[in-house]
Image (cartoon, rainbow, N blue to C red; front, side):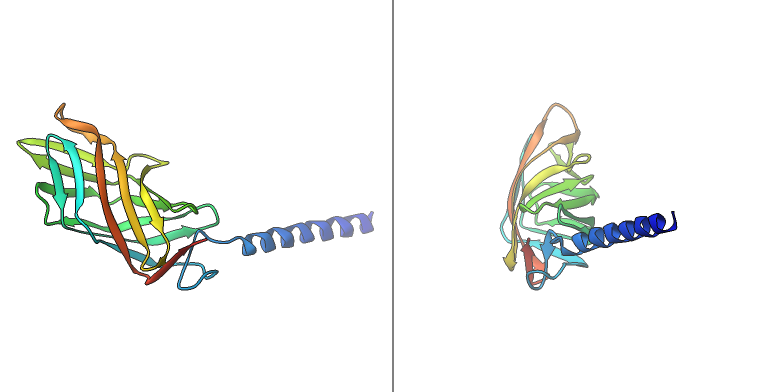
Length: 186
């Protein structure tokens, strides 16, 4: 009986070791500064072309924007984290950020926003658009490399606003990853 317990404990220990070894070898979604090095810390992006939001009542264009946040998780299935900075400048309409939300990046490069909210005010009408609830709203595709980039082509759901606010609003533009300098997809 004692030998059976020892064999059972040995099998449990071997299974636990194999599970840990399997997790350690799984590639994270994002690596930086070189392939195979798990990316941690903050990521910052800046708009490199005019961002356009077609919101029904009017079209809003912004010439500057910064998005930054810290990775909270980076596994083989996704990288995610909360957004600490979300701002827009040089906009043709009054544009305000109500909630930063969070981002998720899949190994395919698909980027999704969750819980973000931005209000656009035009012609006496206020429209609020955002990333929506989990699993989020697809914003676009991240292309990894030295100076990685995010091409935005999104259908943002209307969170609130009258009949003059389109649902969804079309958002397009392009961001460049400024930190880290090299960001790769596994």
